Amino acid sequence: MKKKATWENHILSVHENLVLKDDGTVFAMFEVPASIISMMDEKGKKNHKQTTQAVITSLYEHLGFEILMKPITKDLLKAYGYLLEDCDPRTREFGEYLLEQSYLELENELGKIYNHKFFLTVPLSDFAFSGDLKKMMKEGWQRFRKSVVQLIRRELEFTVNWYEDYEQTALDLEMNLNLLQARPLKQEETLLYNSLNYLRGIDVNQDELLADVNNAIENIDDTTVDVRSDGLLEIHHPQGESLLKFLPLADYPDVVNDIHLIEHIQTLPFPVEFRVKARFRKNKGALGMEATAERTRDRIGTELSEADEQGNVTKNSSVSAYVILEDIIAGVDGGEYFLDFLPVFAITGSTPDEINYYKKMLMTAMEGLGIKIVPSQWDQPYLFYKMRSTEELTRSDKYWVQNMKVSAFVENLFFVSQKVGSDVGFYFGRVDHTQLNWAGNF
Image: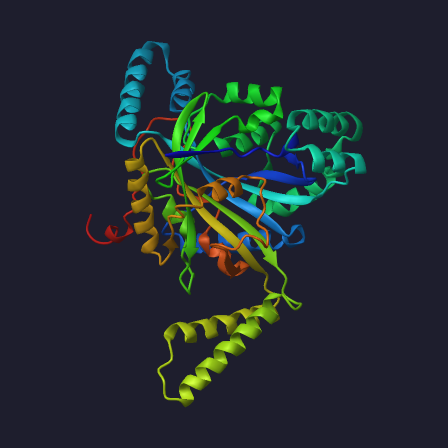
């Protein structure tokens, strides 16, 4: 038994890497090139984490951000086509034979070939709509979506040129991200990657997809999503179908030093999307980190004292929580920034058995790091909606939200890769991730 569900796109307009939503929020989207760091290069990792911490801290005034690691299918035939252009005409036939055999072998052993790309999306501010436009959106968006979009788009693009008010802010943001060499997306890339939110697991013709979206921005969500009784989402699109499963990260270990989550995800033999929605916490104030931590610490401290007086055995979890809260208070005093963030994995496949196999492999790999993942059987529609590039983490989002200092958050080791070699060339081998076997006599 399948339940029908639809989730509308709320994007009104795109200009280069800027995205305007119907609620007036503007987002800037960037691609962050992965730093190539070996699993054995501890010094390189430490330096990279310090750089990442500096960049994320600089985003405080924007209130929040999103980091996305997305597996992008590699067009191997296109890369081989470039390589063939350099073949000597006298040996071209032999070159074609080598590449054909290489392609068949890779397809047989690995299936789809993919690269991991990293994206950073940052909200800029709210657009100052006129009273008439606000009224139109409030009263007519759901019932008269297309006509409203057309009217607002004409007003924005041909009268207001909304993006002009944000270009300087976007340039300033780009300068802040320069430490990570982040680059603003081009217009077609912004449209493409927002469309891919609805096309996970489907190999699409990008030119055809972009033609549809350029024709009408509403076509970004030209997808039907069925909610299945087994907790999977079934995606239907004119260019293909796939099954999708979101798996929230429910808990980290108490100590996250050198956890290097991203590095471990990339060793898995199947594509995994990992997306983090983050929001900065205020340090001071009644609802700030310091006051909240102090209240909880005092409560736990009282419980521990009473247990000690009565001769009861104190729980290790309570003692650990007390130490963590002390660390939070010290962090606030030291000027540290804190984040609430929602980390979610996404896996795709063609059959339920394939999805379940990937899920077990992912959960086993994360268990080795002390990370807990939950199946979230009945929350797939919410996660599909939330895990779109222009959705923000809000105070109403309660489940699976983690809290950490920025210095602890970057221990996930974002924006790294162990890629070896070039994008175009002959294939020689693969990275060996079996660290424990690297010592001794080869």
